[in-house]
Image 1 (cartoon, rainbow, N blue to C red):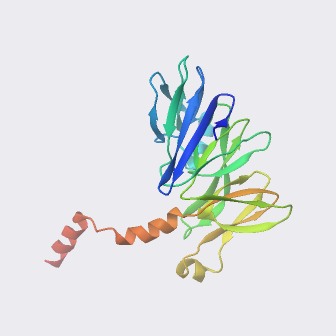
Image 2 (image 1 turned 90 degrees about the vertical axis):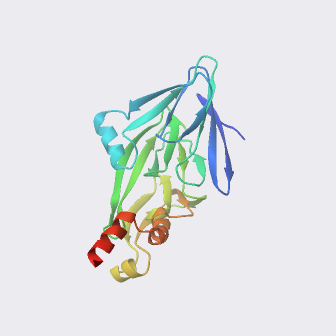
Image 3 (image 1 turned 45 degrees about the horizontal axis):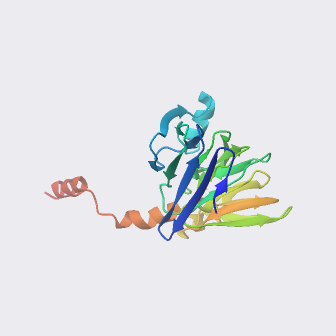
Length: 241
């Protein structure tokens, strides 16, 4: 079913290989997209690149893994359509944001109505072996941001005071009412040898969105299987001589 808002209506299609969103804009209406997410648009749509709010706010969004610049697409008087997809194969979800904010993990924001604003929130260090930081974008409404994931999105609703633990690489987002802290999963031996690194301890109330795949785990599986570069092979041969 189409998802409707004041300035746009949208629907999206999913398959085992990914998803795409089809956004229909009303007369002279605009939408904000992350750079690289646009697939196609109808004749008359006008793209424009703008900085993300004030300088400090834009720099904070860069620190959260989002671009300092965002692409704005404006429909002509007769309206128009924009098609967009995420960079990784996976799902998408519209998140109606009203008076209560929503937190999105860095890299999961894809698009939004113009009234939606965002700022970054540091969620604590994941640590050296965890591969960086857990950084969350604070999304403020009113409006509907579009979030994406690596593979499927699934949701868990926490009751007041209920605790739940999620691997940091599997977090898509959460209600701002959810309290969180980042900690090691077991001891350092488990972190280095067991394949598990850092987790986020969540305390309700509120929704938590998770993704079924981890980019860190996928890269860990893929990189050792990639062929060595030709330059490295030539250098190795030179040293043998």
